[in-house]
Length: 452
Image 1 (cartoon, rainbow, N blue to C red):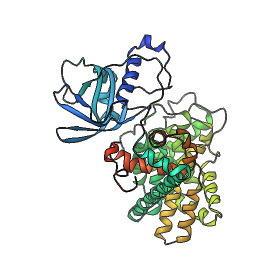
Image 2: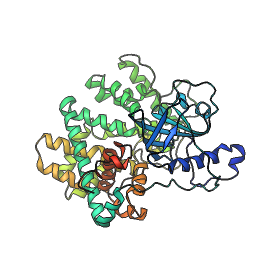
Image 3: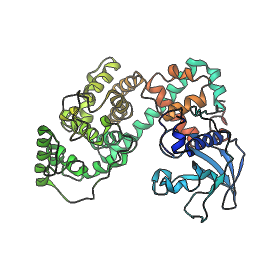
Image 4: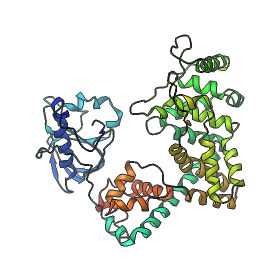
């Protein structure tokens, strides 16, 4: 699947790649596949569709989290759509880990003469009439749509806020366990590293955290920038650097000079993912945001934020203090997107949207976890109230999918998911119910309970 840039396709693009329009129509054809449909595969077996999955308009497989049945076995995974079966190799999906969970390859033309055992089962679907207007993925309403309609707008909003509070406490409990096992500050920093990586570099930042953790505490405190930048593999060789401002070149030289004095061993170079990454969200700027946090908090971010939280009143002030700390523009990297590219206007290494996401998913749950460990009920309560006061986080695939599947009027989503708590509630319901059943409404844990 290629990343889609628009919901409407320029007809001129079909001249250079005519398969594009066919695949778009095949996507809609698969999206209309009903539960119970039997697909004949090229290996001679039949697969029954229990759920065709969620239409993915981003990078990766075309349909996510599908559910199939074959030979009395239930399969859960993704679906990839192509005009020709050989496009699987032409698009290099066989070498892309994002496609390792594909359980069915639906094509219009099966031109694979030799069957590769590692290739997902292939089924041929009939191509519908070509339509040059490709609208946004139409997602059928789930069984729960009637239930949410009966609750009304306010009732549905309260439902998702309650689900969001459940997700908040689950995160807090997980962090509390980590704090008891590895130490409070170490646990906090690990979660902050994880959040800095966005989707594509989360594991990469966690690898960097592991390397950082191998250094003695005194080095972590005094040389955190030297260790992190040099171990990351992002720092260029100053001797080979060109087109770099003098202040940045001085920064690079200083890091290397200090690092060679404390380096504890050679590791393989960390590989970073940069595809479809905005310049302001580059790995370099995200690493700079971590260094800025460590510098501003004297290497004790949890203690720093907990102290701020205790002095804040009302709860909204707690969130404002945290967001202000994260959005600081006073660092070298606020003026750069890369080592050689200077920004016209300075921009905080942690933008407003990222600061909000980090506050929602890391900082406030961590403060709450620490408060629970210390049996500080007042702080735990005020932290949760501060979390409840936060505005809606940035829209994402889960929220868009959920709004179309659960709400009969997508316009209701603006008021229902108007807070971070409600957005987190939507993610919680999707993960715990829709995702676990492969979006198969017949198997939904909610629809089979007394709620609906």
